Image (cartoon, rainbow, N blue to C red; front, side, top):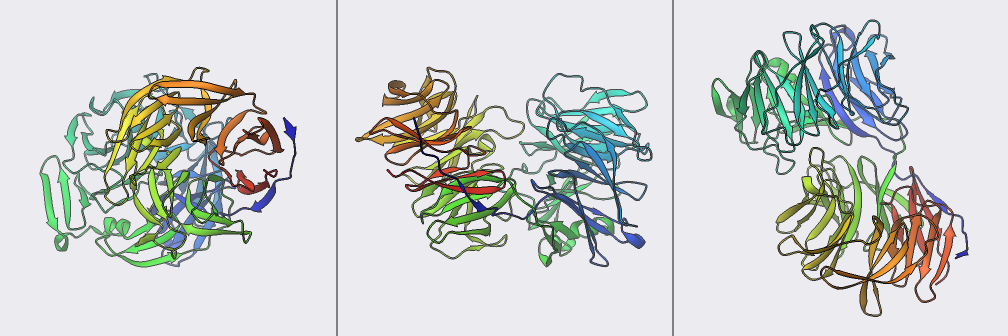
Length: 635
């Protein structure tokens, strides 16, 4: 190996806007009894809590002490409590603009430790749940923390929702295998598990809402909504509405739960009826009276509900005010928010030769033009979404981005004007989702028939991963589940794909099914890339024993033709037509297949594997919030 080290040039921090996590209307919690609209944001440099006085139009913005906060919980003492990713609960009071910590519920020394959900029980204590399945209650006056018993079933639990019941018990919704455990403070133990057997094989009770005598729970990812009798815990059945899947969304009344997840129905105050709207009719239901459908002009929301339906905060922090039916935005406002730094995520190369990328939990698309040395944030390329772009590919003259959540696919033509708003996504254009089985698309490719394929892990509540596709023009799509999460997909020839993960799979694109597979002989591979050399297609694979070039003569057969030692631990491989470029913990290097010579030319390596792109002249990568460029040795 030859060292020809060059200094990586810092190009800048391209994305500096925060993103929404949660919002909630807090009626009467402002000064002089004004209503507050509150929301929390996320950023690697620190998110913020915001309280907007809807009478005076004054915004109070307070810093969180970490990445983000989920639950926003107005309590009986006139304060609003916020659970933070440091395991803390913060307290806000509009009078005097009080912002202070209440309690450290869980240690955050090991990284993120979300106080994921929070509610006030009828006993006046706050009840909290964490992203690791822990539960606790906290005294609002003293900050005393009492940890509740562990979930009685072993498992990788995640507390996703919590609701106080009228008799003093508290219902906790959990995943990754859906449960609804009911805790009784008087007995100091769980007294029931209410989720029905048809819900408990996977997923989450992602949100819950309480009526007068019924508890409603929302099962994710199936989209089923179910009703439970609070007195007995008896499951009364699923709500007879279409499932609430990501797309198409049946109910247009989507809104924040106040702990970071969305609901698509409202509980009508004073009873057990719930209401949703498909844009043409209002649908109401409770188990006693069954389903009913009302024309839009006959729906009148009670005053408390009407106020809740009036406001929303978008993922890119626009405050929306709706008409009484929550169908039309009548006013849109933006409020100044603190500048933040966003951790950068995937990188790709566009059809125009520019470098494109995004940030963690932010749908902005940035562009770096090597010809002009211009780095610019183009804006949100999917304004109705929240997540981050994992992978890019080209489909003709359009750049394809594949993003979390739900494998959202957006196409952008740099030669055409940018015309992308929540109301009209023309360019970039959102074309659909790969779905639950490819929730985080670690790799994507556009095949010769125009379909976009993606692979990666399944979403929360579903094990393994999948191979998924959609056709941007027809809307046709399909998905196949695997017991593992693949991390690379490419087209070998029309109709045949190669899918790499723990095993290598030849994939029939017509049937979306496996043709054959082979286990990589050296154990787990770090990365792979298909290369073409002297008219032949070979697979380059990096693993713990080196870099290997393997022939693929027919499905199910793999022959290693050449192996090389690696100059460093490798997380990513790229191919430029002549050289293999690798990035890893000790920097960046390239292998010239004409001379079999390694050259390490940068001591810095990519911060994450998704952010690594090579051109003939340079390599681009990210570390934290910054984009870097390093020149390659001449070749």
